[in-house]
Length: 164
Image 1 (spheres, helix red, strand yellow):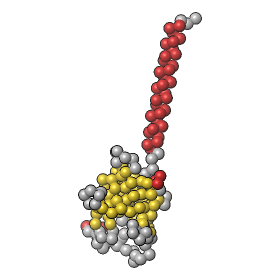
Image 2: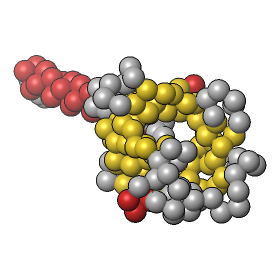
Image 3: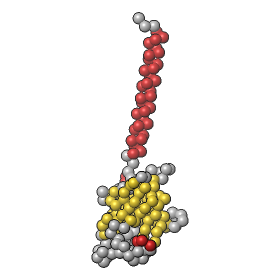
Image 4: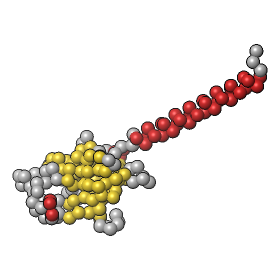
């Protein structure tokens, strides 16, 4: 027969093991929830902020923690065939809008999983680059895109809508 102290020792070890298992499961589910957060990765329909006219489809990809957005399709019927970025400077000048990098260098904010910032966005209508902030809304179905100079308070926002 076992003594009482031996069986209570086994019971204590079992409880500790069970507590450790439960803690690991809870931590694992928290990590899984963090991984399940929606991201801006996908295809987005851009819409002009005042006219609500559909402009383009932009594919946002993720590589090594950095987002990049490329114009995949032009939807604006007022654009000429094969439009180029005439007002752009440098390597983008007079390059086709289709396939052009629109967003680059954007990273997830460590303080808010819905916020992505730190990069820049190109306005192909005037060729200027702006700092950019992306905020997921409506469960990841809408992307609030804010281009700004210096501080996000001085800028312009658009809503983009997830296509895929």
